[in-house]
Each structure stands twice: as C-alpha cells, then as structure tokens.
Image 1 (cartoon, rainbow, N blue to C red):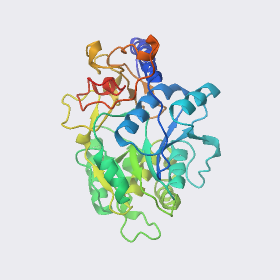
Image 2: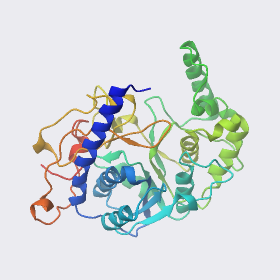
Image 3: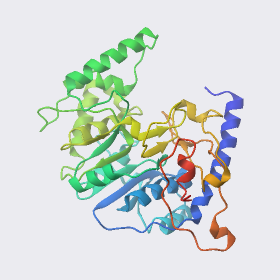
Length: 364
C-alpha cells in the first residue's frame, strides 16, 4: 500500500505527464493502410494521449496496417473525434459488444477474443498504450511477411516449452516462494503447475511460453478464438474459480501464440524497462512498468533539446494502466508557433532516459 506522500507524488507526476504528452497532438496523423495488418489496442480516456505516442511510434517504424480500438467504455465523443483525426478513422469496438462466454469477462478477455476474431483474416498486432517503439522492427515486419505470430518473452529464462518443462519450472518457482513465506501463488503459476494436465482437442503436443501480452502478433488463423476458449475451459477445470482472476488472459494469449505455427520469440533484451540499472543493447521497444516505475527517480531527466516529448505508463497488476512521471519537458510543438504539424519521425535507439522522450518525433 502506498502512503499519502507516495500517492500525492504520483498524482503530481501524472499531471506532469499528461501536460507533456499533449505535444503528440501536434504531430501528423497516421494514414491507414488496407494491407492485411491491424494494430489493435484496448484503451480508455485516461490513456488516450500516451496511446497516441505508442501507436504513432510503432506506425513510424513499421509503416503498415490500419488501427482498431477496443473502447473500454470510457472514451468520450471528443476522444473518438481525436482518434478519428490522428488514426485515420479507426474502427472502434465497444467493449460491451464483445461476447466472452464461456471464457471469463473482464481482465482483458474482451481484448484477446476481439483480436482473435479479427485474426481469422488479418495479421493483428496487440499494442499496449505503454509500449513505445524506439528502434527498427525488422523482426516484426519479417514475422508479418512469413505469417508467423510473435511475442516478447517474459524473462531471460523464458522459452517455448512442452508441458513437462513448464511444470518443472513452475515447481521450482513455487518452492522458492514457499521458502519466502508466500502461501498463495499467482494465478499464472497456479495454471503452469497443472499445464501437463491440459488437454485441448487438436493439440497432441501442446506448448507454452511465458510471454508478454502487451506487445504480441497474431498471424491469420481460421480457427479464430476457438483455441483460446478450449484452453480457457481446461484451465477453469484445473484451477476452478481462480481462472476469473486477473492474469488469465495473458496466460491464454501465451498459450495461443505458443501453439501457432513456428512463432517468433523476441528476447527480453529487446525491450527496456524503467528502473533497470543497465539498458540492454539494441532495444526495439521501451516501457515503463513495475514497482520502480512510480519511484521519484525511476525516469532520469534529459536536456530539453534532446527530445520532443516524454511519455510512459505503469502497468498495475490488478487494475488499469496508470501514468507515471515523464522523463523531460516537452519541446514546444511547431504547430503552436503557427507552422504546419511536423511529420512524425521515429526515435533513434537510446537509453531508457531518452526512449519515450525521442518517441515524439523530434529527430536530431
């Protein structure tokens, strides 16, 4: 639990972030491409500006696709007008219109199932609003061309595994937690402990990977949501009512991608995380999440001339995305000075202190 000082400090940083993030409104709109690629996100009014930074930074690097947005129920008419301008009239799906039964409702299940419905015909990239692309993404482009799904691995020890390997790893992790006094394991670990008991029709040898649902690619598959629903039914049989807890959607996403044909697994070193003591080489994406993301010194500052915009979000394990402190102040947009909006320029690969800052499009 955060104390009062921490709560007030975070509120102040949230306000600073949103003031900084407004600079993205003065960048050129995305132009949709009807090329069989979809960039999909579930967002609400609270993360609208950070989302625009995320989606424009990916669009600048990838140069493919149209935008689909799952409205979490909080987008206003003004929000939708803004999205129509900046994302070239994206398809907006109301969350209430997505049927999830017999899978759980909530916990991002609507997002996963909507994506899998679209992925019956199109290649769909799931993009969280806190993922900013800061380097070239040839791996993503190649995966799309080859029709291969992809995910970012959840850790350096993550790998595409068979059920026996998953259970062995889960037992080691559970034993470690027990030695530390943890009496209840997270849902993800609970289902991984029983992964060797999962039986899904059509999968003689199911696989699993500890991946990140925040940035993942789903190659076209006529099966649609069927594999996710089949896995969900098995998981509910094995862990009971716990399957409705937060985190079940990510486990299902991992299972679906692991059992696609020849999925691409991007290593953890491809992503930079706020609070990391050492920035990994050649990052492709940057995100600001985890406990260190709300600490006062989690995001170092850079001089004003280094960037156009700083942006970042914290992922909360049990709730909606929450903004965190921006790295720097915004460079005054050219449009404010009476000039035309500048073209969105991708950021150069850089350390975590510059990643979100340069994603706004200022090239140096």
